[in-house]
Image 1 (cartoon, rainbow, N blue to C red):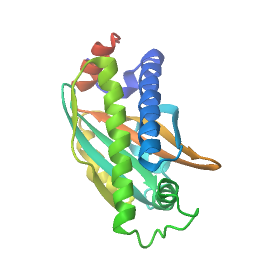
Image 2 (cartoon, helix red, strand yellow):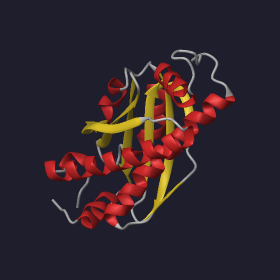
Image 3 (cartoon, rainbow, N blue to C red):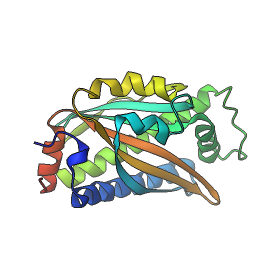
Image 4 (cartoon, rainbow, N blue to C red):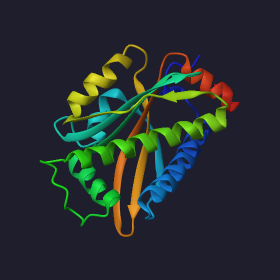
Length: 208
């Protein structure tokens, strides 16, 4: 049985990275259709990260971040969290909505700004799960994403603490957004429930 991501081999991580790249490619296509403008996305890195290091990855526990969280039920239940600093989230809103770079105020996010981030999270999570489903032939049913704006430590404590008794690591997909000369990096975390990782790897035809 696979207990956490620290037990995965290089080949297994390569497969998960490829799935991430396919998911991000599909997300970029969906965003381009939505916005009528080209946005490139890719997953340059896939890492296994201890829970304790997650806040440092996004800039420290006191950094204000935007977090998008959803549950995926089905054949291999899992949770998904997408994090990026508030200032980067605002630049992403500028990118998505065709605003002047730096126009969105991190102190006053409008309902439309929040809606844009929610839609982005929905697209990213759905396309990644669709890619995973295509590779594994498993069924994933994502919930409506929830959005929170708080210090990274507070969001991670509320979302990730429940997984600490199961495993010590999470799978992190660095997600890069590009539009012309603009570039933003966020982090996508996948947290399978107990037993789900075994189901996913078995469906991929790989095992420890």
